Length: 166
Image 1 (cartoon, rainbow, N blue to C red):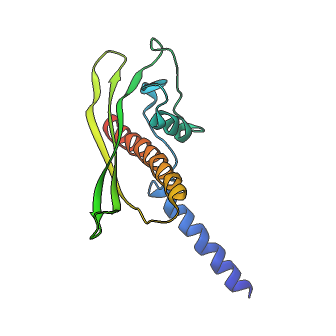
Image 2: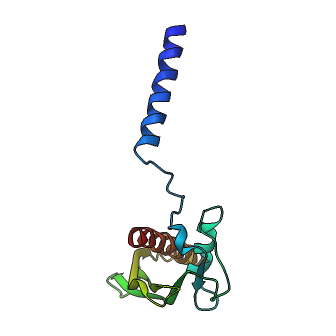
Image 3: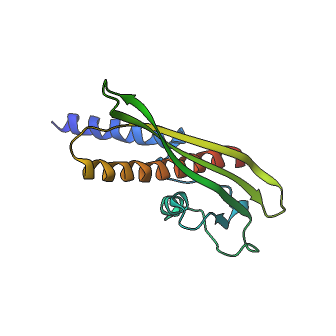
């Protein structure tokens, strides 16, 4: 019994040491080089991606500022667009499914005015079923999908910033 417990503790310690040694980090940690702190996020009024980005950066090493003169990096959310198109219809022409799109254009500029991340577009897509019943529930579900798109877009933008700024 004692040998089993010691072996298990030893195995756990070995796994932890290997994870630390290989550079493993939780996905939630945001690493942007210190020379780009503080960062300014410029976005259209009411931007869902900006809200999601601020939520993702809470508790990280990245400091945000509202003062453009203080910012060493300016992330610009240039546009956010929602759209949908019919993906499937039945024999009577009733819509069975929609394809939802969420397009986000962004770039990043350093304090010297140089482009750090060139203009890029994210196009997030998901199919949304549209049955005859639960019309109100479907409207809520569609709104939740667009909220998920905003969080996913913010996460992808941060991943691209990490990759480019290293």
